[in-house]
Image 1 (spheres, one colour):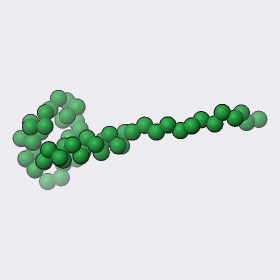
Image 2 (spheres, helix red, strand yellow):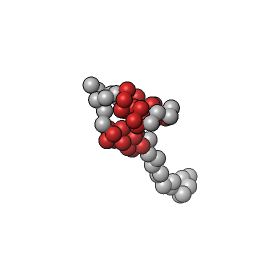
Image 3 (cartoon, one colour):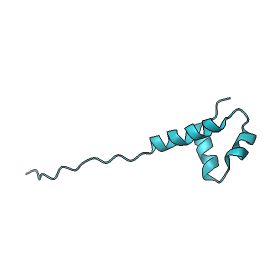
Image 4 (cartoon, helix red, strand yellow):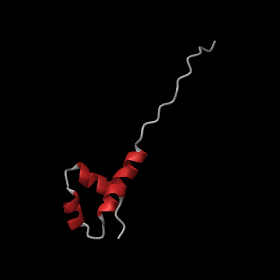
Length: 57
């Protein structure tokens, strides 16, 4: 069964504990939940771009 990352993140965000998620979705492993959270963190990472301080004109 394919379970979207967004579903896993939503469950965690609303306070579900890993054992509860695993009970509701027995196809998942604890590592799947960890990977989903790491992927979500990677997708939302902030990137800082240096600002050019030279004035044009």
